[in-house]
Length: 572
Image 1 (cartoon, rainbow, N blue to C red):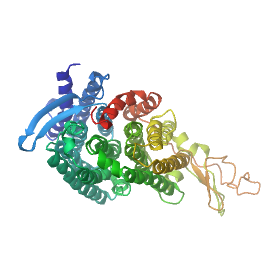
Image 2 (cartoon, helix red, strand yellow):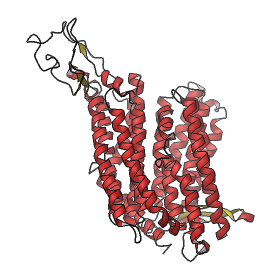
Image 3 (cartoon, rainbow, N blue to C red):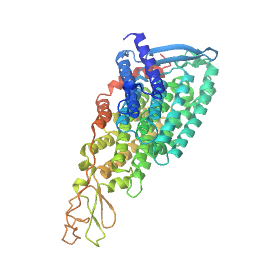
Image 4 (cartoon, rainbow, N blue to C red):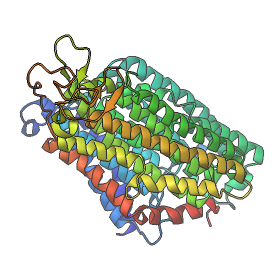
């Protein structure tokens, strides 16, 4: 595909969602109203996001895969000459997968919302905000000017704020305010760092600044330190890096399902992408100084996220499944930050791969948890475990008999339960699925970090990350056992996970042989709706891509590795 066609495709990918957002607020033409105006505007959202996804796929197909390190589909137009701010767009092997991921997740969210619109105000505003959010995230990954990057970075805040505040669940107002205040504060500090780079180098062009013999040569060591500190703080809030993560669990818990999917699948990637696109190539000396501290915080975040999830999954803790997945994101994004901190091609490639894997897997998990709440009315883990069903013992007996085998989610909604278990297994990083490669490469990068970085320190961080993978497996398997397999309570109140013979009491004695006999047959356990057709359509692509990325990692690594090599090599 020629350059002009690619150029138009990328410009259309960025602009079309904005045009679609404005059109969503206008009355639908008479011939397109369908049954009612609400249906028309939701169909409009599916159409626009579908067109953007088609353009993104066409861009990926037309991309010159033989030269992924070169910026392609570029547009470079002067915008504010006095400040040398330009409308500069382009993609390479680093940004292209993120553009496609954003277009895919937004389309799937629009498709899901067409059939299952979250409770709240007018769908017009919902669709307009969804498209504005898509435009901001796509622009973040496509722009090559520091000021445009900042504007796109900030553009997503208002749509996400309103999606949480107007269509969210309990405590949505507090969660929305916490989200906007944290991210705005980080962005203000980041802007100071971007302005410092622009003033000292004389340009905001990210491509020119990434070359060793370009304007970057004018950035002294002190300037780079200050710039990394300021920019890194803003990016760390969005990543989210421990201990700047506390806005994330509240935002995820309160957000509507599609808001959680986009927040985890796309918005968190904007922070880590900024580290790779700006901090590593433009301020390498500053990054080298702060890399051990970034790695230390990343390793602590991996352990913290896993321990927080273990505390939430504990029986009787009143943990929320949606909140648990939010805390798991803190741990998973810790692997991304650890890979970046190694400043090696292996680690940075692992970070970029983990970005995509996390977007696919966690997006799927948030879809499933949202649907599970719709089916059961709760995301409380204790409630979900109880909803697997228990039958009472004989009158006056203190014990509860085990749940019948048909009470677990596997039996009540087998395809839904199987897909939830698949998402959990993929998230724990099992070989053969997408979650494995990014975490493994990040730890390999920590095993042998860049020259000048303390290898003993990074080996310690690698061990901490390895322990985090074990803890991740523990809490995710507990989630599967409690939610999918059901549970019982013995006479002493201790947890006995898994369904057993309904003719036995909790101490294992058969009814009528020393144990309390039940009052008649166990009550039937109501079935849950299994996967609907629209849920298959919205979720199957994520599951399929998770398998493909796990079995064929070269598809992503072949794109990112040449671009990373050039980025770390000063544009050479």
